[in-house]
Length: 236
Length: 236
Image (cartoon, rainbow over all chains, first blue to last red; front, side, top):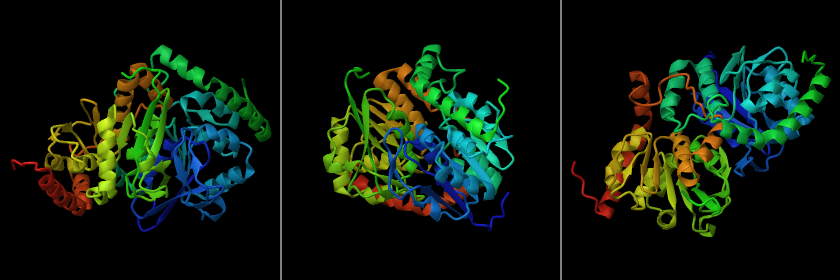
């Protein structure tokens, strides 16, 4: 836990083509941590669009961010365009190294991987990208939330809410996290049981895999290239 | 269900001081409905800030919205400022009357109530505002998601995700909703059981009630004024 009188600076990476709830889910939780400030950073101050078109605006450019106490890295299809972007990767690397905690959500883990930050870590990501984590030197832990040292990894998309609540508890204690959970009335009741490859009907899973097949192939080619650059030896 | 070849126009009301996940949760779900377009509308095209400071931008001003097939009304503290705003209330009223479906999330129900749309409806809202629904002529149903005719009411904040999945199924069938649920890996695992007044620890609930006491008093005064205007007779 961080002392309550320490003002926590929390910040997210925002980029074109992110999956917005990877950012807005954790924002909803972490922005309510007592004695904290949550800001959103991007390459420029222009608004960006998420995969499905929602327009979000950063608070400041990357270069203006102070050393953050908590770094949050969301994912989404737009992650692919950042996998060799040294401006972004360098920022993520430097922030992660100085941060007290890092929250990786969904395929934000691939960005962290390209920044060389996953070596030796136990990690998770969106179900469609789990098999890519070893290219970055990580060990796959196929759970919804994985805590590894001062890193919290959340699985796909909405897992960011669970991961952020876990992180809020680590930062300010369980009662603070419970109060946030009550404020956001987070007692989920999904009307169907189709949220994982294990529980989804077979045809629903097949259609979902089809829908991301091309992207997954591109992500795998990128991951292989990164593995080579990082010198990660793959046993497969 | 709406025929699959009918392109669905879906739209949210965006306003200063909304609780962003009231909007972004349902956006995440409904924007992935096949053959649909999701747009965000506000009084002007300026970006707005949510309660905790996230900056979101509308796609167009209210006046430019076509008749929507699906109207989505989020809530948040900023709802209070709209309770006598005839520009917004008139837009909500007209859109709701022409829409095939309406999704009210959290204290978005109070906005719908001020627009005179809750009379005779079974409805829900954030736990801290449930007692206000009768002022608008509604019957309180203290469940997470309440379906009343072509209206779907979601309770507080994160309940919008559950409500939107339910609505997606009503609009395009259960398999379409299941596929969205899988894409967003919505198999929630809250780390604590503090998401409702019934399950939260007593001191956590007391602190949360304290935190919204002043706002709740203001909301109640407003609701009494609206009840008078609407001619809603209260039995208490």
